[in-house]
Length: 542
Ligand code: VG1
Ligand code: CO
Image 1 (cartoon, rainbow, N blue to C red):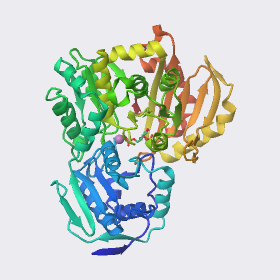
Image 2 (tube, protein in one colour):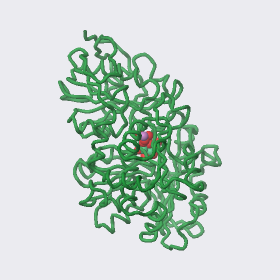
Image 3 (tube, protein in one colour):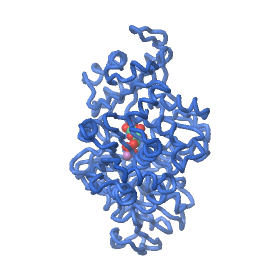
Image 4 (cartoon, protein in one colour):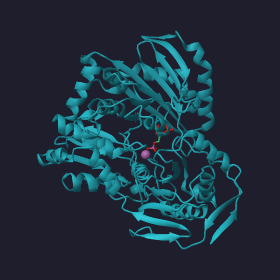
């Protein structure tokens, strides 16, 4: 039954910020999926007879990839595979299942917020036994293996029926198809006061949740509408589609503009929210009030104790380096440590496992806690709902009160997408060269206090990660950060993160681009963005 198939390495299978992401036709090349999956298993030890969780966001090629993964897992000696029905599992649901089942690990099929379809993007990510993305030393080992792989092992068998909730045998491995939502919904019930939220909906609270035709549809229907009693129709675009209806399932102000417009319109719902392709990001917009992800992290950390799952308070907060310093101010007030990590959820795993932090977040619309080891879109929406129900206040009120207490970190990210890779690399190289000379330079009201290339020392396992983003810090606490995306599939994407602190309440409600104008101008000239990329303006501003 088990066959050993000869293969040749592909040179381009290096996992990025979050797994291996490529265009669908790249994954459709002969043995491309097989090579990568066998390389994952070749880099692991001790999974004989153990459980593997498998699921994805339902995008094009999800089912085909799952069949291949199951057959290779069976041939390599896994004892059991647990798969979401129809191949559907959100990224946080995979994490929850791995933890609940004490599985050896899991494979997540997703390219997250990137578009799907035959010409869209696909992705494969391996998660380890704590439920979180494999740390860098594992992803680098996988990559090294892909460079020399010569064969893979696969069971020859008919495809598994992914749509019926039953168990079947695949070689010596048992395959169980499970409900995609159940474990996740039960976990949410342990964290939040469902009665209190239900009561709020009964009393007239309104929500609009856009699942963006991606994976969170079934979860949002089951939790928001069925369990919590939000009005039918509160969840829109709630059926996962292989091409996400032709849209970018990216919950930001560009791709979810209709939601923003709704939130700013007369008679807007109390809360507008959305998640991304694989369900780990969140967008929060109150009536007339957009909440930046960095502010959302700070506000959630500050108010988490109101939810039953966090009654004991938070022990620490972690944020990715480009995320604004708003959470730092909360940590200081709470008297708990704040950790600054490189971009990507894999860097939070050790801190969470060691019990050093309770809540983590990224400026890219990701927040999560120690309940799983991934960021979690619906979790963030539910925590907001529970806080709103407990405080009986509007999103706008909570945000403004937060700024009045802590000050406001004006924040914006400018993305220059799909620029020429050589130009982007040259820009970074030139800026890196310039960093040491920048200290003390004055531009109008701004003086550079320090400039460096961010490096992270993991306090738990002692590992080091260098070249994680160029930081330019100013004497007034303002900051400009530059880094290249590690999730794109075409050319390079330059991300520029801009931040300025405002302590004066009278100046806290200025439109962000206006408040950051001077820094934005400087971000362009310091790095000579137009000269290196040919772009005078970013393609996406969030
Ligand atoms: C982006 C975000 C990062 C996030 C990553 C995965 O990475 O900036 O914060 O962790 O996507 O999120 P990059 O390297 O393109 O900047 V997801 O929802 O795409 O799994
Ligand atoms: Co995602």
